[in-house]
Image (cartoon, rainbow, N blue to C red):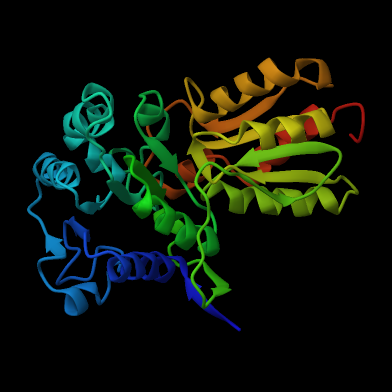
Length: 329
């Protein structure tokens, strides 16, 4: 028997279980304690663990990120919650120049076991200053791993693995899927970092995405199936390091690929995935690779414009039809 829970509860369970397992694990951030978290991910943790392990901070991201990095260097395992990953930009110097680089700069003497987590990407009517996708910005810089789950099961298993990892981890959630429900095991489990997943096998075209965009991709897969087209759907789960083996195996199998990313097109994650496929699978491709990304504009506030700016099912289907042109269309 399993348990049907929301993603926010799966994340809370992961934090609670790791705090039980290891007394060096603690969490800090804005409103994580007495308010139970802005998105209720930390609900009940302050009452259970107290103010020494569940710590409310001032609105000072550079300050509490730096404090947490120092704690990690001292042997603790901090989890930093950013109320929005957009706010991590205020702590950019601490994250990049200290957390990411310290292991290298110390010649391997200092590990930085820290998890930076919180919502990433567009929510609903929060406008452009709260809607960045940060993975392509941080992903360009060595020294970190980047994880972004799309399912309840993966969210719990990957967060537990991230907390146990000795490297800085950016754990990118999405506000719009905190309420997603799914049955997961009651027993403890881990999901390995660095491994993607074939969500559905297919033979005609490969569709690759991660995080919230997987929900739109699943709808597109169903729509294509109603026309007799079998799409192979891949969830990256980990953005850095990419599961190149899984990606290239599927690309060679189908010969046609579409990559969907909520972030912008220029210098994005989709661009990196496409580059890897071109490098390793060029002779296997039967059509140019297509990508569906956010329009090249800051995200609008108005809901109709927001819906058109980020990838949607209509745009994904159009890209699938384009790579299949002359075969099934």
